[in-house]
Image 1 (cartoon, rainbow, N blue to C red):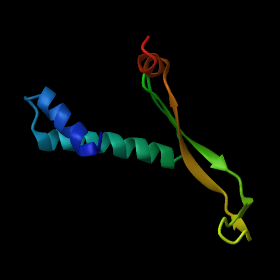
Image 2 (cartoon, one colour; image 1 turned 120 degrees about the horizontal axis):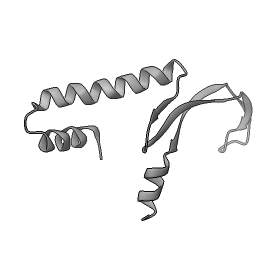
Image 3 (cartoon, rainbow, N blue to C red; image 1 turned 90 degrees about the vertical axis):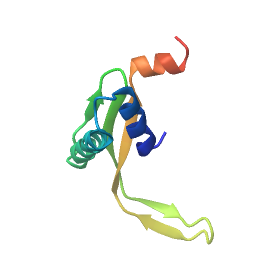
Length: 93
């Protein structure tokens, strides 16, 4: 599902809301999650999961084409851990 499909589904299920308002709501939610993660905060949506940021240390990597050593800088990557309810639904429980 992509963002526009999510917006359309929410708008269809809530006919009292205008689609442009639903779009603003969805965009605000994603912006807040992104903003919190960029500050290094953890975002938890009970039953769904938790978004956090993990730090990857600098390391020496290899260029697969040439085999040459390459310095890879330290970086921060997003991490998602599923909640128990989501895991149970995915596993048919």
